[in-house]
Image (cartoon, rainbow, N blue to C red):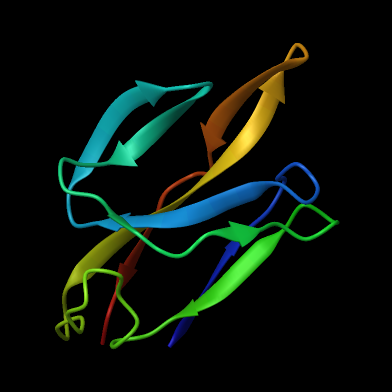
Length: 101
């Protein structure tokens, strides 16, 4: 199992983790989606008051319902609500690649 932390989020912001096997660079809201073209979504979650969120990623915890295969790499990114110049939008964390061993 590997901890997948996200920091510098707006306090108590709604969002969720995304996962995929391919890299992309797609403008969405105020950020860049770095996963594509097939994206899987984890359950909704809230960031902590401190603007952080973390969860454990394990071989049997993938949102597509299939266990991860050993020596495969998945890319994770957190998509969250944000505001830019007082306007509601969405944004993304930096993407992180996790190789399951």
